[in-house]
Image (tube, rainbow, N blue to C red; front, side, top):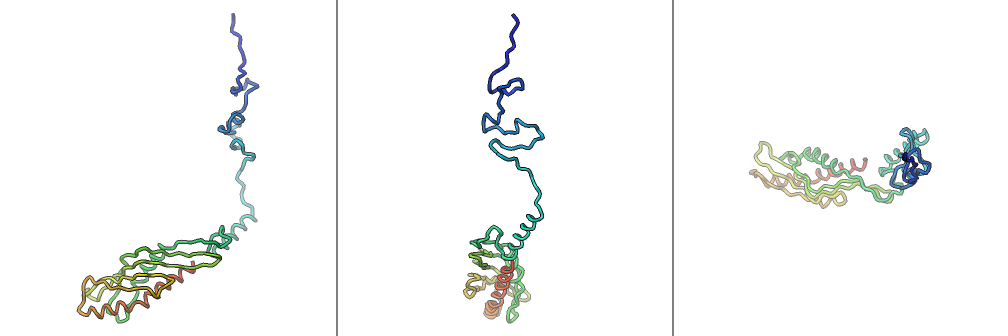
Amino acid sequence: MAAVSQSSTNPEDTSEGNANARPLAEKSSYYYAHNQVRSDSPKTLVGATEIYNHKALDAEQVAELERQASQTLESGHSSWNKGGTWEEKDYTKWAEQRLKELLPKIASPKGLVTFKEVSSIDDCHAANVFSRGKKKSVIEIEKIKLGWKVEGGEAKGKLEITEVSSSALSELHLSVKVDKAGNNQAEIDADLKACKPAILDVINAIVEELASK
């Protein structure tokens, strides 16, 4: 007897010849709806009620974004921080670079020494802090080592600048470290320590620059 052809009634069968077939998207949330649509149709996940297509911003929306960006530049804090709550913007790397540029340019009062490069900056933190709508620029540094020498290389060493804080600059401390002593080392030490006002001026200038950012 010839075999009788039977149509499958399995509800899992999604073949075109089965009228009872259910789309994969209806069977399980693990399937994507695009399994049952043409390749050129918009795609959406199962359960989504809308298909989102990119739409260019209109002129009004562009103007609003530009206005928010302008407010950010004027106030300093981010546009999302409309309440002016706590926010901190870090400028440590910038401050370290400015210290390396400005400190070696200081001239000692008696001209006995000249400064070389900044050899190290330990635990530096510089930032603009925004709190309750107010902006404060802060710089805190544990230690700066600034190289010095006497003309002709007769004497040389490092000037250690410690306890640097923009909120308590009067507490800044200087310590002279000698690698090679000069015949008039006491005078050299005094000349180095007399540089404190000039060093404070540099710190204050950097804080003012930071405040303008």
